[in-house]
Amino acid sequence: MKVFTVYCHPSEDSFTRHVRDSFLKGITDSGHEYELSDLYRMGFRTDMSEDEYLRDSNYTTSPQLADDVLAEQEKINSADAIAFIYPVFWTEAPAKLVGWFDRVWSYGFAYGDKTMKMLDKALFMCTSGHDFITLEQFGFLESMKNVMLGDRLAKRVSESDFVVFDGMSKEKKSRQDNWEKHLETAYNKGFTLFEKPRDDFSLDGRNFVAVQNSESGEVSEQTVFCYHQKDNAIWAEYLGGSIVKGFLIGTMDGNHCLSFSYQHLNINGELKSGSCHSRPCVENGKLRFYEEWQWASGETGTSMIEEL
Image (cartoon, rainbow, N blue to C red; front, side, top):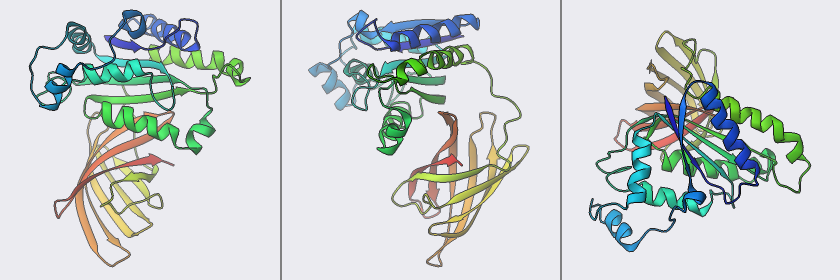
């Protein structure tokens, strides 16, 4: 199997370059292959042209896409997985990688009548000067994940992961302390990228809390879900916040995605019900489910729950 790796860093004299090399070695040591796009060395053009903007904003497939964009799209469709390796610049990827998404995620490829294949896996690996405490405290980590996983990869991959190699500022002592540990993680991510999920995955006895929800939703950070599972049947009780008592029941498919119906009583004495489809993602060691739900009344929304 093959992973298309998009690497973006302006200097080869960087820790991020070592992350890249360790990850790619893990890929080859596991018997798989990779294709690399080094955006700075390629001189990939960052800015959209006016023609490209008008093409996408008018939802048309003409004019013909530029050759460099077509080449990147071909690399995606010839791969089984995609990986992005880059440093964090002001809570974002470098402008060249942002521009890569702007141009390569074109109408007719990544949205609209898509020709982009559904990839098995996607992996983001970014290096950060901040440590995890700072990234979590100020909401930087959630912002990065929301952009990359929630927007740029939404419904384009079956499974995704987001890894941050934190505390790597050159002025910090933690850089040296974390160096070998982070590179071991990068190698292992490459070596195990195409491993199949274990068949003994189960939600039985696992508890989750809602950490994001649309405005029309009713669960919140005070709502706890207690899951149970037998074979492919799943069910849960939930309560807390505005929920007095709730129940859900449904099924899990082979990719651990959930489909279920839910019903609860809220603090206003209203009985509410609906249906939900939920996609799993392991991010920095935590199991999360990204949910798309619909009330029985027809209103829709999205939410995310995270394992306690």
